[in-house]
Length: 152
Image 1: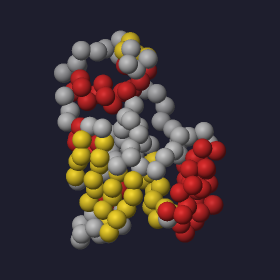
Image 2: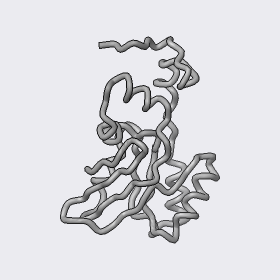
Image 3: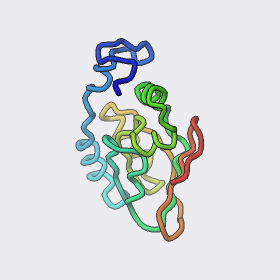
């Protein structure tokens, strides 16, 4: 199956061709992570590189945690196109794609502003996306987005 768009097709909502959107470079987060670790060290409890995977990767971190992601950024237009053209359920989109969130830091609440400052110093938009709570025996996650509420 090839879908209705070719790689050279310009899609207005993307502002570029499908090929350009799919082959745009991945941001390298290693310098940001190194700077955050250098400045905050013990306040960092986890880091997740979501590029190449979904927002559920954090479920592998820690034990007995409930991850609440309820202030996510709006997904990049490429993800809306993939969802619509592929007829993929939004729940699966958040599980399989990063939805524009390339990297996550899990830090003490009093360190959030400093992490945001480091990211902004690299010219990267950053925001608080949620929080961690005590959970059951197995890690769980709830995503609340403009596309629905999903439990994993």
